[in-house]
Image 1 (spheres, rainbow, N blue to C red):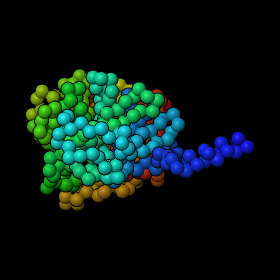
Image 2: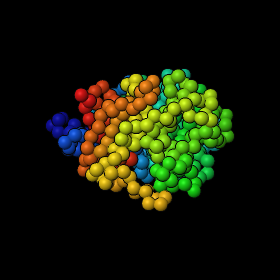
Image 3: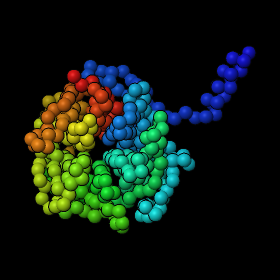
Image 4: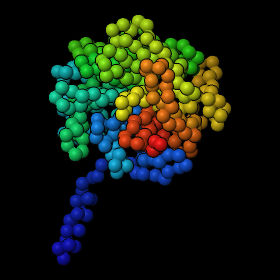
Length: 355
């Protein structure tokens, strides 16, 4: 009888206490395994040396997902619960108010360590406002904790793509296409975007001189705190800048037959991930008619490369063929011997085991 009563009590608790939304595993194909139900995980990062990842959701309400790589499950991380919203108006006075989780449309991500041992997570947001959302992350607990602290509004008309943070608190954000420019323009090699910078104490973002490129996309800072890296999507290249003098890039490193999207440090390597440039299954190169580029709905092969800064080349780490369940590769992170792959188009994360 006690066992029956205990079971009934558990059923009541489950009925009244909603469980967090989770993404479920789905069947693998010939090359990739998947975790489905993760809407457009455009960017993905490892939470320091933990087994957890964070992925963005590039769709209204998709927000942030916490991914457990051991159990291969993902769940909605920022829900807007009271304990997850502690606004710091003194640090972020420009922010108009708390983030609405029902609108949260997350894109590029950045994770950096703070002096107090916690971590700062930045997320590009297109939901309800164009902004960089600011979170504190506590990795001391068995399950990482997330608290929203404020935001940095983007300048009017400027839509951020990727974000990165230096140790001194300086925030960089890329803009892919400024007002009056198109994707077709950067595919034709014309400058369309730039890098924007905010320093603690600044009222607003300012454009960084010399950083206008064809399709400013992925972004990362160097551990030396002196350099940063910007993906020029139209050139399918990683462009290196010296923070002290950005008037002229130090180097342009072209990718071999793929289009880098996001770029992040992972397992000591600067990994770039993107779709195959010349894909036979899609008729070859991406077509541009006038200033209009095709939306790349055709599934292309994918490539992950490691940027060799000393040699000025990008070495292939892994690649694959077009798959019916996965396209639009945009990010990669390594955990042990597994690559976790994000996408700006798919409804899933993909994984592949390295040789």
